[in-house]
Image 1: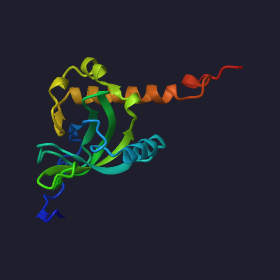
Image 2 (image 1 turned 135 degrees about the vertical axis):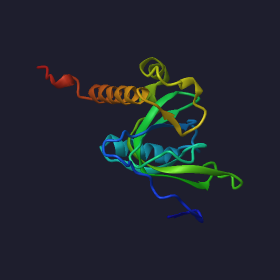
Image 3 (image 1 turned 45 degrees about the horizontal axis):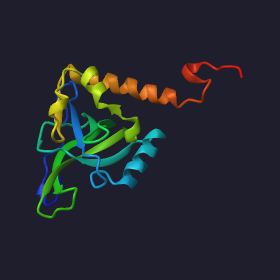
Length: 185
């Protein structure tokens, strides 16, 4: 497979059935150049409607160790810190391409991601909840994309995110229909 004039490695797949997938943290500085506002809004709307979206995201200095289906979470940094998206790696290939900020002298390494849920910053899983709910990961030392979340912190993160999404979805139900209960008016 060719990517940007180079021969890219073949997608890595798990060699044993039931082999655990790896979880990675991808980062976003919250800037409009890091995630264009029109793309961000479109991805929020699509995933809220149950449609996944495909995109690519920087993998920082990581060049290997990823496989198709690995879990990824997007951590918004700087302001309104917290998890704003989740997805899976499409093929596990990490490839070089021009830097996302447009600097022609820089190359960044990316992977294709299938986002299953993208949230507005206001609905993020707050950073403080990550510190408390996923204590096995060093959240204060994430400086770039591609950081692996090791077991058992990976399972704790997935459970916390799932509960967060469930709470968000429940809070959006029409008043009187929360938790499957209908109140007579």
